[in-house]
Image (cartoon, rainbow, N blue to C red; front, side, top):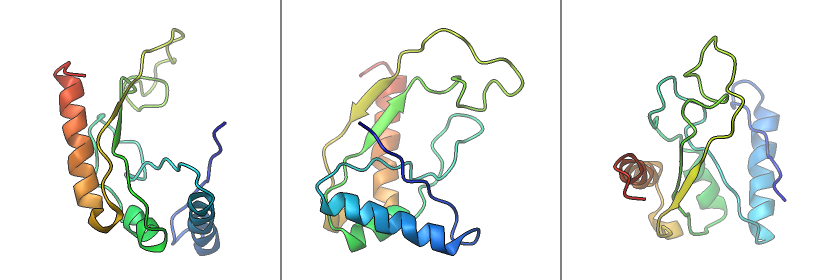
Length: 129
């Protein structure tokens, strides 16, 4: 079963922002897996945006390995911005989940994680996965 931890910008709601990080720390302390989308938003063209520093804040507080994951096949879905004003397609799309080797907590940076996810995307785009 998956649960969501909503997060807002620190400027928008500092209390909710801190609460989200507290909930992530609690989940990690309980041995749960936590998936994050470190870009903080959907891109307008399907590319991978700059990763925000929240991942570094999480790891500083809860030093755990980070597993780079790429989700392929989502661009053009009803959740992306590709369709803009079109109705969402009503048929199912295949989504490819590609996983890389874990990064040790002491080696995790937003930039390193992004590089690894971009490499996974390049493999997906070439049909190598």
